Image (cartoon, rainbow, N blue to C red; front, side, top):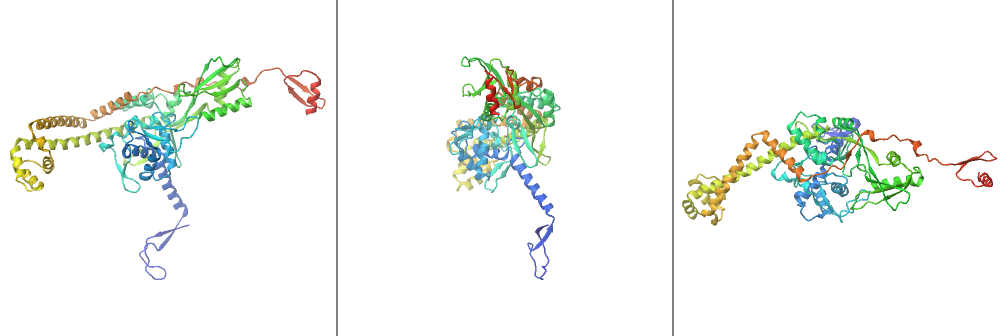
Length: 561
């Protein structure tokens, strides 16, 4: 049993009046444990580990990007700042957790071998695919990438809700007004309490084409959307050898394995005398080449694969990833690679789990595993609302400006009278009252007139004001027509998606294969056929000997036993 204090308006056992904190109620400890564990689990799920389906970000990632965009103004063309400054502002103002976890998240957002479209442009050592860690935050610098700005450019239009930060000193966005489905483009990995997520990255152009198709065909199936999104597109390439039917099942169920293997090609080299060279130029997603080289080196040293002579890393900035395998002249390259696919990380299963936070009917985020269509539809619905809010905000600004310009026009029609009233007034408030009494003006228009610089009341300036008024009215009318038609709003969403795809063109990195490419592993193919001698000693010992020159050598063999 556990003790719990509760309210009590009566008296204590000794007859003295008791306060609300005096009464102790006994409750089952299992109930208390269950309730508190659920509170902890929901906190981890919604505030740490799972991404929002709308902008594809976890809270720590969203706060890092918001600090860089809103607080530090680290745009793509700005001078980078120290990562220690970015992490310090993030932890101090929005994310009260350890610096290490924030810096780890920042580093991942900058690694081009982890994200298909990196959101941070890192300057300095941000780690490598070999598994080398990033330098300390005090040495590295960062700024936003161009595509990251499209996640936040519409914050100034009040397109998303804001909420107080942890100590109530400032506001932060609940979600970023993303212009592209970042969750599918960059993917995410997270482990919560009782659930996890593992969404692979995809090609930006393919995802946008699928979005455009879904805008025009709301009843499209997952299979139809897969005409555009054929499979994941990993930043380090690789070859997917899962068949199309299995991939369709993965995208329909929101979970399942996708088999990915590294790619290789033969290479001729005059330095390799009497040997063949095989070059591995792509690896599965998440594989560190440092540990991969260690695995292959162990196989060479232990002679588990006699056909493999040596392995070397010739990776450089010019040629990219290049792991060279030296094999014997008479060895079959397919057989060698089949062994390495079986016994190393050159082939792996990526376990897809498309779990994320989605808004329910009351706009509360709840965890859910989505299929491909649901994930795209959630983003498009959010994008539609964001575009509508943006236009509504722009219309409000236009109408406010039009209102003031009309006030200028009213005053100019009888400018002499207005000037006499202003000269005869006692101060600003008196002038405002006289203008409102003699002209059809409200307080906003009047105060704008009184703050107008004198040179702007000339005939030349009033012509400019009238041109601006005409321009603003035409622009406002155009926005009103868009807001009056869902079809026009969807067209805007579509056009902006296409513009983004044109601005950031991406070639597919991961090639598509089939399960037919997988050769069955045959241990017999790796037995080296060679002549040998079997010696039986007088004492009954049996030993295999590769070369035996004389019979006297058998006596030495007998002694060694």
